[in-house]
View 1 (cartoon, rainbow, N blue to C red):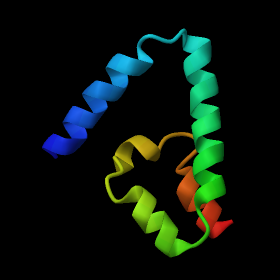
View 2: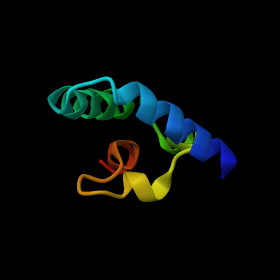
View 3: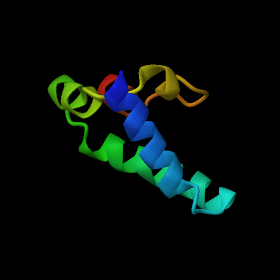
View 4: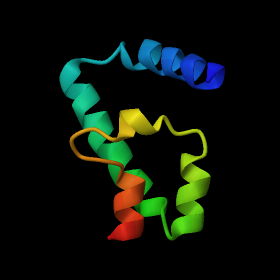
Length: 70
């Protein structure tokens, strides 16, 4: 849990430098990239091994799960 908290703090500090519209664009692009590199359930597990699952369960859901189920 400590690893997730530290990673979250570092990401928030870095992303906090962006304008809200840039954050929206970054989220869109990151989701697209994650979906593109998810080729099967094994790759999904590798990508998500340190995922903060509740964070990814938002409105649009997890792009990695969508790629595997898709």
